[in-house]
Image: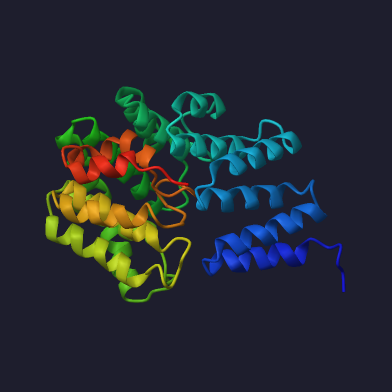
Length: 302
């Protein structure tokens, strides 16, 4: 009835994405962009879809197009940096990241990732400590999530004792939230950040069985068949926890599958894990001596 209206193909593209039909979703979004080329929301949605498909050149072109419409937009600049990080281009990512204060939250994930991949642990810890100390959190749970990020990076920096202490500070809040979720007190069926944070907290505290149990439960509660977009991020978290507790072979098996999967990650953003991120991220250092992992780092995608 309205062949010149972009809203219908945009909606169809979003539905296709939710169902895991990313190629079809991209086609719908491109159709919508043809009808409404100046709509920055459409441009960003299409860019994100290309990122999920690990088709990085068209994703970058679209983010540049979004910046032509909204110059210096920090969220778009951060999204562009995440693409460069996924390609292993840290210098380009650094140039794309806007200047931010230590209390900024909109691009904190991209900034933390950059410092982590550069192994700039001193600045990374200072930034994460400032977020915990100065952050204006909507809830105690949000603060606990930030504490877990700090603890994980303390651990990567070699401060195992500090990581355990910080993780323990978050544990009570996370355990209470998890119990309430299990009892059905108003929680949505999916809150992947909770399983991720609690499983990593237990791993840092040396509670291997609990860490693996919570991570595996996340995979069971929200499998990729139920959520093709974000479901695989539970498998990614399980691989991280397996690496943290020494289950290296199982972690590599999960990563092998994830590299062949189009998905959006709670950890790496819309690109999911890539060979470049496996090479750069110190979280995977315990796996580096395994030839199977080395092969994953060298894989190239079409």
